[in-house]
Length: 248
Image (tube, rainbow, N blue to C red; front, top):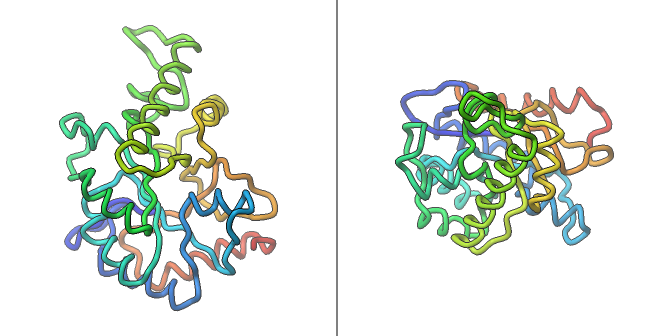
């Protein structure tokens, strides 16, 4: 799991472009095959075959730096990635609460058409922390009064459907995967995502996908810290695999 890239400043969610490229080269050289969330859905339906050493590169929020730094690496190495988009931030940049440039639809269409990048949902306009104005996992206060269960379900369902429709109309590709904001989720939000037509959801919970036991819902991910050195991506994967010797 990645987010933003900056050559000058790295932190928990901002990585160095050069280190990212080194990480991808290491994965490639180790025989890993990158797949998208849409590939995984197709594999689960028997429409595709799982590669021997699959790995999924995911990026949240659709920052412009993904186009500037990540896309060239993907093209160079013929690797795939999935980017999760907050559609309202693309449609209406003035509502963006994060002052880091996002991609344009033109950039996203170019990447999508390459076949290397799948753009999926990160909500339309719910990018707030739990308990904030857009919480997906729980009811919120409207005029100091908690919304009813019906109001919560309508708010979330409408946002999810809208994000899905916008992405499909703009990019012409199926949207059926969703990444939770900040890792906040609930049984209710999962039900609404399924009703809205999503077949796969990802959390920020740390872990790997177990082909024997895991469904395609509430998949775990491994955040790659922006200050991590390149080789640590291999040791991180190995440590996670050691936690479950049954992983395939």
